[in-house]
Image 1 (cartoon, rainbow over the protein chains, first blue to last red):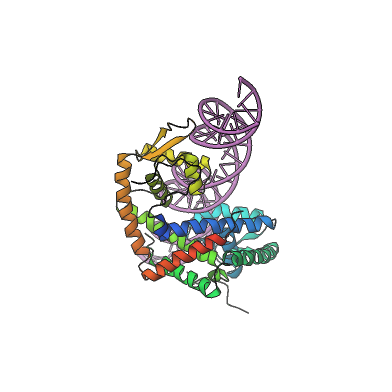
Image 2 (image 1 turned 120 degrees about the horizontal axis):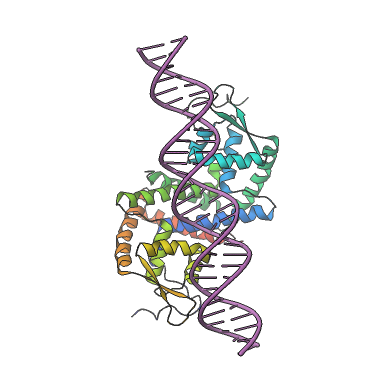
Length: 158
Length: 158
DNA sequence: CGAATTTGTTTGCTCCCCAAACATTCGCCG
DNA sequence: CGGCGAATGTTTGGGGAGCAAACAAATTCG
């Protein structure tokens, strides 16, 4: 019964029920897509994470956003956001301005350099997206995004 | 032009091109699914990460595996694996036995307690998978996994 | 046998995430 | 209008995931 215990070099492993699990496929694909994202930027001499890109887009499209509002939109704690903004601000992509209306909050905004960089980043993201979707038709790509959103809606946050 | 600067509490943000990006949907869904996984286990009084579950399945199905082979299968560095195995071993789920044939490697195996725990964990994972797939037909679930695998194949690892 | 390679480990570094505590500021209510 | 509770940003402390480089022990190959 069964096979002799693994010994030959790099025989494909038995993954059991793993391949039938949606969560498993999700995790592996996410990891590969993340690596492709990083490689795309590294090749172009740029450095940015997917999360940072999303953050920059949000700030660009919602000028004057507060850190709390941004943290909520990103689904992370406000304390997690602090060092991320520190880094982006140190790279002169973004500024924390005092809000004119509320002394507690900061009004986040891209710097001119940040807007220029975001334009470059967006081109790289398009290249990256095109490659990871290269095995899919446009209809399949839409289907995939739609299915992912529906799965997200079914997952309980607590 | 445009809209007045964001001020009302929690007006839905402008996400720009983000919703059309596959990488964005992937990241958000992954995060929600991860949270659901953790919540499912926490509710049952168990504690395990998706990565740890995958690791346990792999060790269960491939007795005598070495750490290098396992790291390769998981797509992580061998040094990353060390503290993970330490933790699982401290919980008495898994053991590092000396390999009878190669003094450099460890033969990984589940403990009896590990096998019992994995059976419990597998039931919880099934519950979790059922919930996150509850908005999809079985055909759609298969389609989703298939599309994810094809995307993974298109992402370059470098 | 001796040199090169493999394996597991340690150390050091970066990043992401949360919880709790804190000072500042706002907003409400008496 | 004055005080008190709530919100905001920050700091600190903790944990986990990940990589690279260096190292000792063991194997393999010349």
